[in-house]
Structure formats: structure tokens, C-alpha cells
Image (cartoon, rainbow, N blue to C red; front, side, top):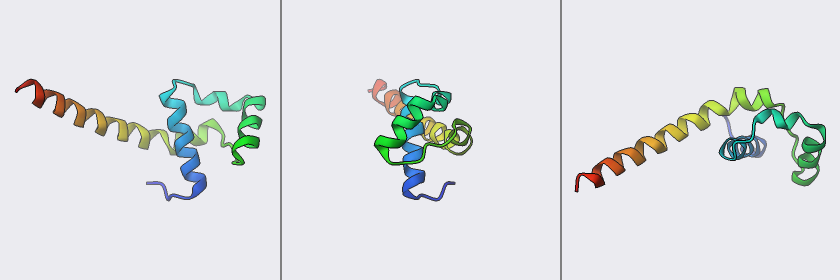
Length: 80
């Protein structure tokens, strides 16, 4: 489990946004793009392998929980 600081929150949110938008994390390695993010967010932009290693598993687990809850709800309402 990740200890939450503002940097970790930013990294988690950015990773989750990239995954939700279907943007490959390696796009962060584009110097122009990463510099843009760094300037306008005033945050350090991590290497894509850092995001993949620290955050994607937790995001995936959270997504599976949401899907499970949705499927249980969907199944129970179909039975009505």
C-alpha cells in the first residue's frame, strides 16, 4: 500500500487518468509533453516505469472491485 503525500496523490491521479483515457504511460517520456506537465502542474513528472511499478496494481484492484460491485448490482436488478 502506498503512503499518501501530495506527490503520491498527483502520481496516482495522473496514472489513473492516463489509464482511463487509454494513453500509454510511456508517452510521459516525450520531453516536450513531460516539460509541459511539469511547468503547468508544478509537479515532478515520474518515469513511466515508476508509475507502472507503484500505482497500476492498486488502480487495477480498485477497478476490479468497482466492476464486481456493478456486476452484483446488475445481476440483482435483473432478477426483479
